[in-house]
Image (cartoon, rainbow, N blue to C red; front, side):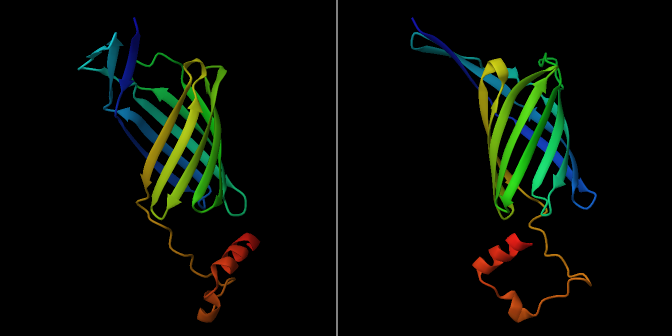
Length: 193
């Protein structure tokens, strides 16, 4: 005899992020697992039974802050507080701390740890790719005794790519013939800045 139980769900995450203090400090919030129900399928000796109603997923509320470091502001240290909003989540609030390093505009590397109550629960690692206003985020996170889970997200930046900065009196605008540089020269200039 063989038996197995599997589950699947689709849910919605919604959040907002605000940037303040010269684009160095960020604060945001998110609601996770809105509207989703876990539908289970039990298999016993090659016959399956599916739970047609499903169980609601635990809805979460997260509040986070972050600060950008380094000259190009490409290193972010952040933390967030995660609290369940439904009676189905019978756990202590979670505290997450992590970092994101963006060596180039189109790629971000991420690492973090989380705790539940008074003990460390797991670590996570991720990768973010950006293509203009679109993005793809991939991550894997440990969940202590439960094992691990993988995530992916597709992003759209409603603000679009930022407009080029206007020259300040200390930085006069370059003549048009100096702006035409090769991609290799542009990378070299960016590394020297």
